[in-house]
Length: 377
Ligand SMILES: Nc1ncnc2c1ncn2[C@@H]1O[C@H](COP(=O)(O)OP(=O)(O)O)[C@@H](O)[C@H]1O
Ligand SMILES: [Mg+2]
Image (cartoon, rainbow, N blue to C red; front, side, top):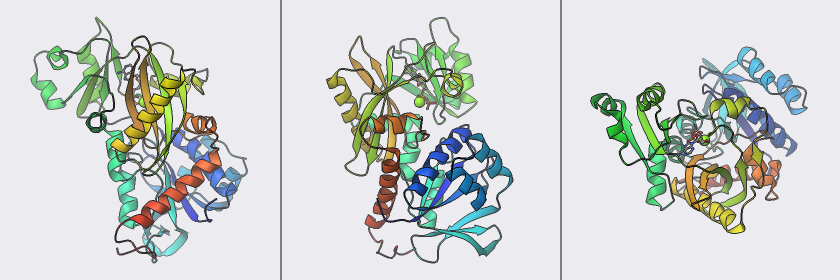
């Protein structure tokens, strides 16, 4: 175990994955507290405000009294409104009362943004934490932003020779200027997957089969972003692999998501009846190894640090594997794929969070120009 530190957990957030984040945070809080760390929980409201979770509520969460939804309700209504500031000692941050910077609620050595989707996983929060000079868990600004942007992600993967599906991308203006949307997707075979470039949770995504309306699918994607990606669909299995580490990261076991009805849409992700995860995925050893190797390469391609879950599409009949996407802050509940694929590799939940905290501190310490005390600001 790494030496005990004061860790601020950011959770909730304005994205559609607010609830998942709350559930993820519960697991992280418990694991860190069990590991002897001092945990300060900061709820991010749906409008992006920060609320300190009161000590009493946190104790209940730690001890297993409150579950899931309860954290969310309490964080948005009860805790004091706070903000994060740079600490007096470099490499630390302060949780202070808003408009009263002298009123310090807590001091933090590390921040763990357990936030999914836009704002928390796309470099925005990472930028805030960089500006404070405090170490934080997970990917930095660039890797987070690249991981969130499906166009940039595909460019990075392709540049490193990681297989991706045939696709095109265009912006709203280009789309509006064309007389026939089919002209934009020439060369791609149906079914197509039409996606907003920067979203998540399958929001704004449509599957367009023969006879389906491509224009309607593009309009739907454009409701969520100004850039749209259209991919050729892969008929096959969905496989996922965890990556954990820094410059020499490890890959976990491989898990499978057994999707019904063609693809993994929002409803199935969050309201599906049956648990769709099979871990480890039944696969020939050579396919498992190829997935693990490609996961590490994909992680390196975006400049990842800390963790990511790499998602694959596998056309079994053709023997073709494609990296569909990387999630730089994957779901982190006890029932989520990321902890499951690591458990299957012999790495428990507590060990994952402990390693992540150590990696956050290591990245901060190794940065050129940063001294033992935290360095210049
Ligand atoms: N090219 C594709 N071929 C087949 N299925 C796809 C393809 N792209 C996406 N899907 C389906 O849509 C789901 C969501 O797409 P994904 O790119 O992972 O978006 P998100 O970032 O919202 O999770 C996938 O889990 C998969 O079921
Ligand atoms: Mg996905």
